[in-house]
Length: 287
Ligand code: 13P
Image (cartoon, rainbow, N blue to C red):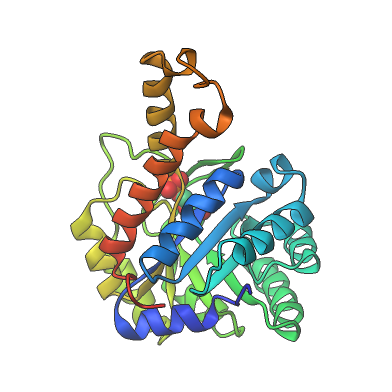
């Protein structure tokens, strides 16, 4: 059964580790992540952008697929199904469809409007036991056609939004989605420290988790980060493994064209990537 992400993230924040949010794109992705979480006795959050949900045939398809897999794979570790960077309408539709957690990303609105809309979403979500992530200071890079400027959040704005009763907070600290450019200056720990002080025990969320060096991940966790989002790295290893299979001509041998064979190396690569992140984030055996 799907659970809200509130309890698992409060526990992570207290225990000084982070739970991974791994974005899903299809059945293979979802299965790979759920199997890895179960094998490693780790809580996990499945992230779904609105674009990915549309690709998979809509929120209902995603909820049906995930619930079916939880049953079919005998998954017993805590799993949250979370809309990633949800719009106001998208977050509401995801809740209606059965998502157990939502992100409302109002970071591109004027701050007062972000506050007002986040407040409405919190009331609705909490009446259904659904957890809420809010965002202050947009995350840079491109995700599903939405380009964020990569701001550094204002700790006072973080404090104001954290007081609305949200369950966890994404704050821009120089992190970006996708691959980090050569000249990236790293995470802004000074600001993260101030956000952490201003927001008390609020679990903080680090977006753009792909490609951040290990020491920076560990430092971020020590400063209150309890949820780390990873998408691009799984996509890259999946594509690499699939390319290798094709380049080695394996699809031309026997029944190598069978999608269950063709996609297997990519699935194994995702599993290895997810396990590595769970080890780094410290979520193994925390289910
Ligand atoms: P990456 O694609 O950079 O890992 O970022 C994922 C993310 O933050 C999803 O919200």
